[in-house]
Image 1 (cartoon, rainbow, N blue to C red):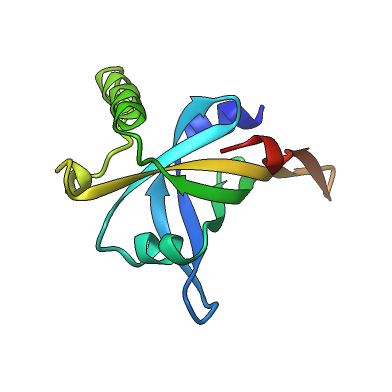
Image 2: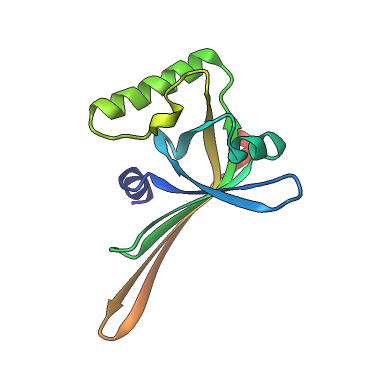
Length: 151
C-alpha cells in the first residue's frame, strides 16, 4: 500500500539539516528504485545539496488532501558517486518519462549540474484519516528498517 501511494504521489517535501542544525525543507520528486529505496535529484547549488554534505539524515513527506493520506519517510540520503550506478538510475528515470511519469524538473537536466541521491529509509509511516458516521477514524501503517544493512 505504501509503495503504491508513493509511486502515485512522488512529489513531496524533503527536510534536511543545515550546519547550525536548522531544519530546511524543499520540494523534490522521488522515484522508486524498488525494495523501499527511493531516489531524487537536485542541483549542486541548492541548500539541500549543501546540507546533505554535512549530514545525510532526512525526512520526506507527501500528502494527498483528497484522500487525507500522508506518508513520511525517515532515513538517510546517500549521494550516488559511482558513474555506472548513476547511469543506471538515470535510465530508470528516462524509462519512467517515456511511460508518462516525470520525476525530473527541467532545471536538473544538465548532467554536470545535478546530484543524485538514494534514500535508505529507517522508517516509513503512512496515515489515512476518514470520517464515518460523524466520527473521524485513522489508519496507520509503519515499516521500520535496519539501516546497518543499507548503503
